Image 1 (cartoon, one colour):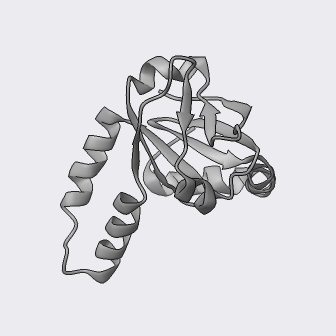
Image 2 (image 1 turned 60 degrees about the vertical axis):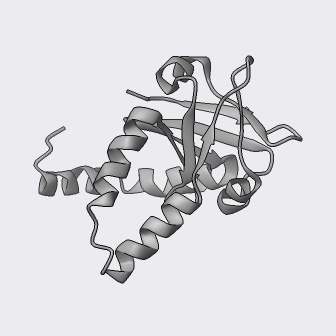
Length: 145
């Protein structure tokens, strides 16, 4: 399980250092793809394959299912970190998420997310202002905190 948040920088070559706490769980290779809310999702291979299996079950006759699958899979990149734990984030993914220099890497259960630091700050402040209402809405999913 991935939890916590860490601030890092992207170097001139487009590499970001994966926090040591997450490296073992990610394994020798992992997938980075376009996420939601203008961030990147990072999946260990076992989680990626489980998600891929679920997405394969979507009906290709539904336009929204086709569109989502196309964007999700075409934006994906299999990454192998170097010996120092740095992962190269493809240029199209950096552009999608607006990643320039400072990033925040957060653990979100079964995946990591990579955010532009300023974007994360704004997003998290806005979400925190509504934290109690968000918690109440979890009851709709039969989750008690």
